[in-house]
Image (cartoon, rainbow, N blue to C red; front, side, top):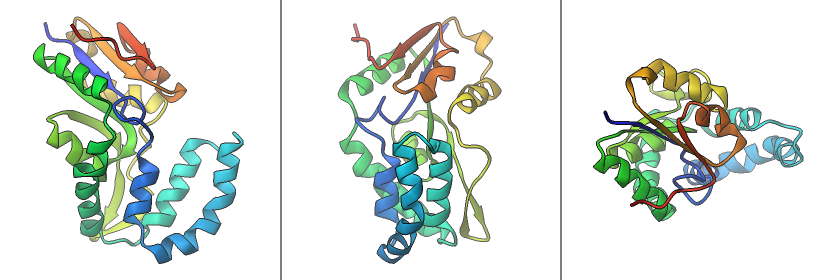
Length: 199
């Protein structure tokens, strides 16, 4: 029976966190100029461990995307997926994904990253996706998340909601930060900050 393979994205499939680069590329210079002073104290707090990643991502999305045309941001996401993301993939991770594909396993990317760029990337590579979504209303971004951020325990929760874990003989999970621990706990074979060599 095929297995389930759960992959975190940033730092696991990629060489680094990609959301900051997407925000920089998809935010107008003027908005960035006025928004950065608002975010700066949170950035410092995050680096000092006083502000959670969830809080800073929520603030970043609000400052960067409130009122932005949804179709324009979607285009930024497609371009980012086709160019930037393709340049920062870890070869060993893509080899492991191919190993699972050759076994006909169900392969799912489970990420706190944003749907606007992760969805086109996942579709490009024929992978299933669970991720954070941005809210849209009347053709514009609201600056809010649509539902909860797909981080920490929410990753495991959404996996359980979508898949019947008892139907898989084995569950593989791959992650690289403490935010992935609940996801890794679902696995019969968990890999933390390592990518096993493929046969």
